[in-house]
Image (cartoon, rainbow over all chains, first blue to last red; front, side, top):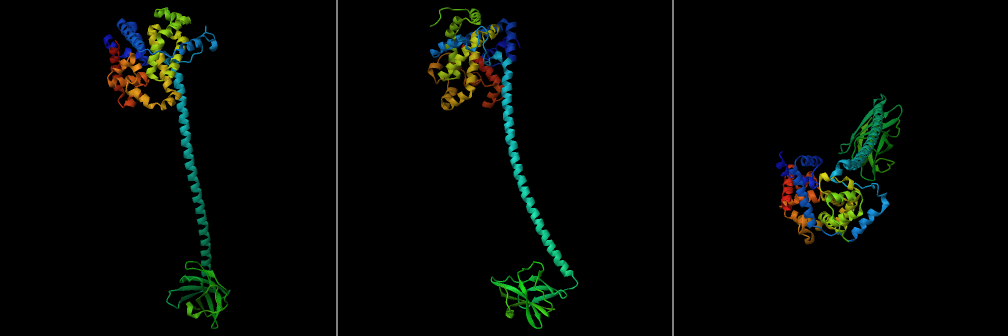
Length: 271
Length: 179
């Protein structure tokens, strides 16, 4: 770049007005030292800037003058013969020396802000994980409960199955005697007199009514217990019956009856 | 109470380095108004501007030994101290809070250089006011508000290279208007 181009580049003005970076400032110093024309251009711009500022002067408050002189004559901040502690202002000359402190402060502020943001982020993540963990804990407990109830049901079914497999047990199929499609089965162990009932299909009783099992012994009905089961339940132990010719179920008032209501007989099965 | 003496600039600098109070009074009487005028361009509030001016003169007094005459005139050095101090003030939290109630005022200050006749029909601001709009905005942002080229590029949504070119053009325009 020749001298005239440099003068017309705007670099001089940029430096004088304090808008240039360090490299540009140093270039101007070199150019001024090497070329009197550059130096002259700089001086001219500075002089016109000063003249313009002088023309735009605004008188400060009159009290300010005394206030300033009072401050410089007060030896409060150390002896005046020694340089007083100075609050550094960032002038272009000071950028190189004091700049790094500024950046250090800025960097620590950025780091602090970053660390705070990270804390917030991690705290949110922690809360999410915590709530997820509690959900999983609840699910796990639910599964454990389900498992335990399945175990109970399996044990019941295994017990039922072992009863049915007992060679002493006689199954007695009880078929419908009315038009309800009802079906039940009695598993009867003649040796031990134990009676188990399986409800395959029975209409849901009206409120206040309950089914009752009867054993027919020597032509007479003997109460074998009221039935609380619903279709789908397993075997239910009824009253012991040592001997019988047949079994029947009638619908009675809740709690059962002394003698069966024969008109409300649902199923009958002969031994 | 103005001092009658006059000094050449090297004499003045020499005396100020010796902590000569008479020289300092001369410096104040001679330059306080000009610096105050520039500070008021950046901080329109007169009381706050006076605070900055006081800080500037105290720093000039204390830091006289750091002034290097080979790098430029004494006034240029003081002008840069004043501009930096004023821009620092505009970036302080206290100042920004105080400006929240005056946003309308400062908007007027940004968009119209002719809002205050006592300040704007003379001196530097008059010159800035004569610049083309696109140049004036850049000088306002770069010089009076102290934004970096990168900040201006972001603010005006124009490429960084364009900002640099336009600021150069604005500065050359400014020089023509000043001389």
